Image 1 (spheres, rainbow, N blue to C red):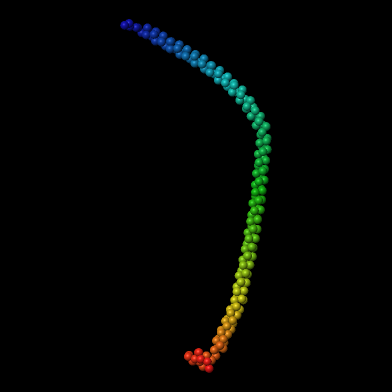
Image 2 (image 1 turned 30 degrees about the vertical axis):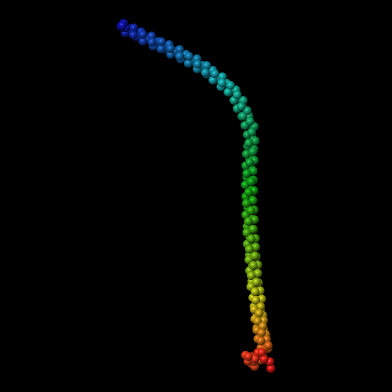
Length: 175
């Protein structure tokens, strides 16, 4: 085995460091070239996107500039319409409240009239019942008494002597 002195070892280490730095420089140059290609490709793609998007952006801006007055007018019209609808709904609510108040008033009047009419009919029915029933009872009592008198007279006239002169066994005998 050979012994190397310090100077040889330092020379070998310097050669290894130089080789490593050379290798690192080559790798960095390769990365630089790859990054340059990627940047150019990205730049070209950005140019393509930019050339496609810019007309769209300018058209959108022009459309927005054309539509802004129309949108403002439509917004104003909608505001006016909403205000008009609110006023009309308030008027409609007031009219409905007034109609409901009148309906309630008429319903209470109709209720009072119906109650008064039915009370009158009830009083008239009670009066008619009293006016007809009392005389009918009186007539019925008179008729019953006349009937009782007639019955009693009939029974007295048909056998005036049968009770006084006839005996129990003389019913079949004639004198």
